[in-house]
Length: 253
Length: 253
DNA sequence: ATGTCTTTGTGAACGCGTGCACAAAGATAG
DNA sequence: CTATCTTTGTGCACGCGTTCACAAAGACAT
Ligand SMILES: NC(=O)c1ccc[n+]([C@@H]2O[C@H](COP(=O)([O-])OP(=O)(O)OC[C@H]3O[C@@H](n4cnc5c(N)ncnc54)[C@H](O)[C@@H]3O)[C@@H](O)[C@H]2O)c1
Ligand SMILES: NC(=O)c1ccc[n+]([C@@H]2O[C@H](COP(=O)([O-])OP(=O)(O)OC[C@H]3O[C@@H](n4cnc5c(N)ncnc54)[C@H](O)[C@@H]3O)[C@@H](O)[C@H]2O)c1
Image 1 (cartoon, protein in one colour):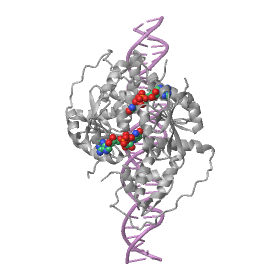
Image 2: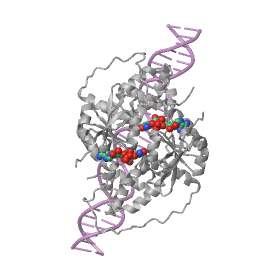
Image 3: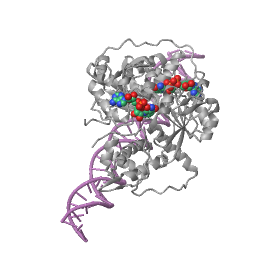
Image 4: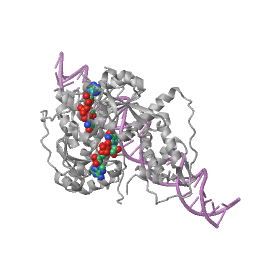
């Protein structure tokens, strides 16, 4: 088992804070909408409202990219769209491979907004031999055996994992070995990757649990002193187990 | 149009930091796996590795919940599973409604891990009349017209939005009006909600763009001085400006 | 009971992100 | 050209989150 980094070391890329990078797509989306309405310029206040952020934060974010605004006027929409697109690397084409074409993988493959910004679904890969050749979203599913070649041939550097949790680490290792350096992981698994590989995870279950936490707090504020059930002192509280298992799948021994 | 909060004011719930809350599900998942292997106790070091975090961070996180560890030994797995579950509100049942049963909505409805931790898909709602009555994942899809009643009848407080972006705000407003106070939004839209309503967003496009940014950086490190294409210098000189009339496009009127 | 050894719980320092508040910059009018 | 007005760009302070490092706490052996 590879002793890889689990956490990316807060790269602080070229002076642009990570938090800012995460907001750039938000600005870009709002700006694109303005562009489509042929709005020539926009103030930081207006744009901030559209993006749902503080205007000072937005100005500071833009200041990391350079001084693209005009005082007294605002920002030129088209110019800013171009600059942010370039900064995010959206002016070039990014071939993406999706591994695990089940419910979620198929939905992603069918997703139109996927390809709208330079991201192109270059390959669909699944371990099920029965799926090989079957077209999903107009693309024939290919078998895992050829993963290495598929990644190389298409120059894929971004991989999307939508396999069951138990297979995620293995798939991840193979993707990385084949040359993938960025992974978007939908499986509820902590992935270990070598230095230099970025992993971002999308975890529906975690999101819901965070919501539930706050939800419980809201409900508990009124009925303050609520009796708690007896905490099991060293007992088995009938742990409910999911059908999916939700296996973290990290560390075998 | 309601002037709702877009940002939750960093509630700082009962002294537990938001960052800690976001990690609790991660710990819970690792602990559940240990529990299924009948591992009785675990040290902060081991658990931290399994969850992919720093051990000091984990201990500090747990310290917010109370002193549940034993020095020299570690943490009792079962007990900790129970405590975290209770803290997250997972000991109770959370009926969830999914609105917009398309590619993504159907995938979510079919997702088993959804129901594995107290979250129960109570209703599927869509605006398409043709879908009304059609069973998806064993549940009949209901029409948007009955949204209000469906939410009330099932006591739904958590709503999931998987409609097209244009419909998201409207659906959100109706959900909130019906009593929903937590929303998980998959549509690429900035939602406005009144105070007291939590919104979390899952945005695939943003994740990919963040990956692309770092990917570009990695690639550009070697081929440093790359010539940029001609940036479009100021398209329209802008005669007419909409100071307040031009709405930023994200929120449909 | 005493000593040793392991691991927790936390004080303290540090760095990052956020938001205020304002001076500088430029547009626009007279 | 000068005055006024708008909006950017940023210095600064503050709070949150992270991490180090270690004393205290308990288990376990003798
Ligand atoms: N469906 C959802 O809404 C949803 C939501 C959140 C998270 N997830 C997670 O996403 C993942 C996929 O979910 P799903 O509902 O699509 O599951 P699924 O069972 O429908 O699809 C999984 C697919 O992966 C393929 N697969 C299995 N092992 C593989 C391997 N080693 N290499 C390549 N392909 C392999 C299977 O053949 C199958 O087609 C799971 O980890 C799940 O926990 C799903
Ligand atoms: N499919 C994906 O993988 C994916 C990924 C990321 C984001 N998204 C986003 O998720 C959303 C849904 O994506 P999708 O691919 O499932 O789209 P889809 O078109 O397949 O499904 C949308 C569904 O919403 C229903 N709908 C439309 N207006 C409605 C309304 N007012 N009330 C209730 N239902 C309504 C439609 O009838 C349809 O069934 C979109 O906003 C999309 O941008 C999808």
